[in-house]
Image (cartoon, rainbow, N blue to C red; front, side, top):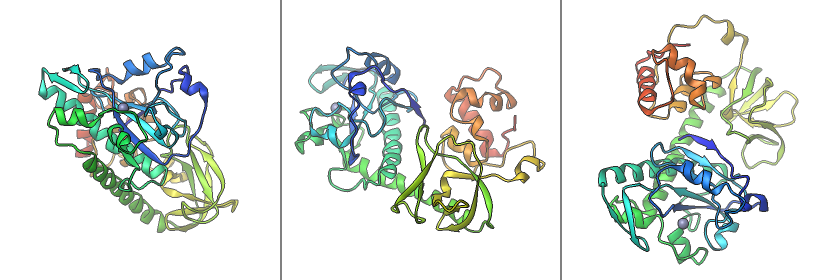
Length: 349
Ligand SMILES: [Zn+2]
């Protein structure tokens, strides 16, 4: 899942500037046959577009997430009180459906439609897992993750049928209960990865030096009084903080900063040592052994520097080194690069 920041700064909802305490996430589906998230991003970024605003659109072709509001901004997506508590995310819909009235539609190409809907579902699972972790939410707790349709039943949203109408109409077999379970499972996988990393850092000899890494764009890495996420904040480091910090003690995957201002979660850092810059490196990156097909996830896992991740432009030098001179980030080319990584044959630029 790739998050592309596209904040709708002209939309009156953005300029209203209200913040919320995030207590849940609402899943929507756009309700018109338009798979391209960028079309919505463009149309909604207008000072006259005062009807609605959501936090993100999920593209039907790529599954990319276009973040259109800061996550804790008050959105206009539910037509009810859920705007005060819930983040709203829209999944784009296939171009091969044709609405015939209300939430009824006809479909001219089921294969295409199902592909698009599966793509948005899978990205939504990843995005919701990420947001649940970010805001300490339990996806299975009542009222935390809800669809627009469920929001209406709970009395916090207007009378819409999305996105279940789409899943049902295409016989996808998806349900909101299933979605919540999938989010929970995705969180478990992410937790395991964090634990693995934590175990690695646990055995690290102190002191060692780190830099901030893996923190979402414009987000911060909190510094806390104790080595756990519930301890009081004593400061923060920016996502793009260029400085190197020294860690003098490690506990449960957290590291104590030398200044003793507090602890940071080492998952969101990378160790930097003089060695890594001078050590002889082989022609290839190490073999990728995970299951992800997210190009950046794969790259990061095998130690590709952050400067070659995050966008196709950043990845260009690597594509070039691997025989793709006119790389534009297409799925085919990405798949090629991922395949090389899986074979341990991805060349360094
Ligand atoms: Zn909706």
